[in-house]
Length: 389
Ligand code: NAI
Image (cartoon, rainbow, N blue to C red; front, side):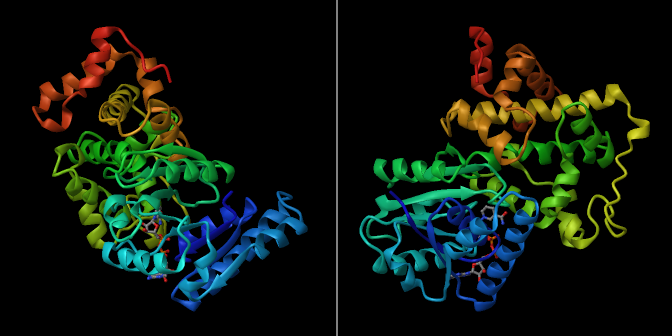
């Protein structure tokens, strides 16, 4: 049973993961090279606990217990008695590999060594270890204490036992696990690309404004945020970098091609909420002019159908390439990015014939590889099959 957890990196993700593990009763050591980062992590946790206490979600004993479960340490060696370590430091392969090979000298043979990386391959990180079979990806979503999903990513070196024990512990932490193949973007950061990319493209073609596209996705699709609101929330710099990384990692597959519009917004410093301006203006609080007044329902339907079918196609293709099970692909999108429905369930609802027809219409219009229909959708349409998620 995993009880002792070491977290490396006490920034946004590391401190959130520490909270999750401590809440679940593990004894956690949070390590960072910067004392200020540890002090901030501690102070932030205190604030979060006070808020939970005020709301009546925890009592003062639980607050004490959770806080006492975390020790803040400034030496990697302190993590030596861990059963599991999760690394959440800068997204840099060489730095991560250095930390992993140093860490392995301190911990016991049975310790699982995991990374929370979003974009690096787990195989490359695992290669820094003497015992790479103990290495795995354990990918949380921000904010870690609130987002239900955790992607667990075995590398080709990872042992069955490491996978089994990692899934078990993350489930014990009250999270939903989706097991993904070690491929760019894992599940969520791959399948979600068209939500942003197709929206940006519709805008670039001059078909609709940011507000019209956002309204269509919210009002017809039931998405909590439209693509432009969400990009402003995530930050155009961060979202653009994820797209560019996935595009390059997929050997420039045109399906993931980044957008000039977003690149210029990032270059101009129009990052979104955090800079006060993005696709919308946030300088006077949050002022979203979603243009509800002039909602054109036929146009909105076209926008929604085009983005939805591209998302469905991406989810079906992830299943076609065995990136994850149908159930895990749908769970990933509803629990990792709050989609109103799983995309494969949505495909069943719309019908395979509708999905194939819509993709082929787009392909006929543009003759671009970006709009190729996944072979799985075609195969299922021919066979009269459903995903049945
Ligand atoms: P962050 O910048 O908030 O925190 C990183 C922390 O690591 C900093 O406190 C820094 O002082 C510390 N650090 C840097 N080098 C170190 C070293 N050699 N040893 C110990 N500590 C070191 O970064 P964030 O956002 O928490 O991301 C961390 C990792 O999590 C990255 O791999 C990122 O790709 C991944 N990730 C980030 C998500 C996000 O939304 N921010 C979501 C999921 C994964």
